[in-house]
Length: 280
Image 1: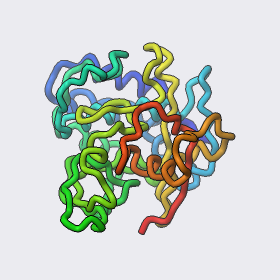
Image 2: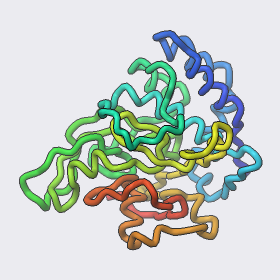
Image 3: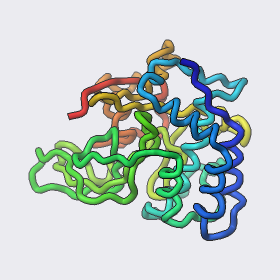
């Protein structure tokens, strides 16, 4: 099974959004782009098939690959979910590398309209699971042992077939044994280019304006009740592993993409960690 995912059309879409100054993102830019580009949309559906997770996709820094095209799409989605996030006050320690979105803020309807036009399915899990849900806020539970449960959804998550494109942003209630409210809702979010409500960390940060687009997308799949995290890392020998963390801590950061009880900071090399588990 050959996986193709054309880079140029997605990069063009990102640029169109960056230059757009209107208020009807879906009608003026996103939906016309989907209609005009059926082949990239078919590519997305193909790479979302369950069997695609068994196909290794190299992240070639000299040639654009499906992982880099998917990464451009992930940036588009990061922009589209931004109006649903509370904006945190500026922090003098924040990076000044030009990675935050410099364009206009989208309208709230653009995100769901775009994902639906791509043929993606909403995350429909009614129980909290870090594969499907990104923590935006935490309500402390009186019982320290109470596991996380869903309280509210800020934006929906979407899957392209079995491939996770974006997690749903949620508020959860949990006991202190499970989540520290400040850490889980405010620590750096790994494998993310930009969030308005918290620091974000991905491999593009710190690179120049051209090199940053060579970043590969993290492929996670949900197949027959099993969650597969960062599948492409499983095909290659690890370049480096975060020895500062135990194996259990590495897996928790991989699953949640952020700290749960302790802030991991922004300097961990997490890109070569993979994992699979049953979703209960």
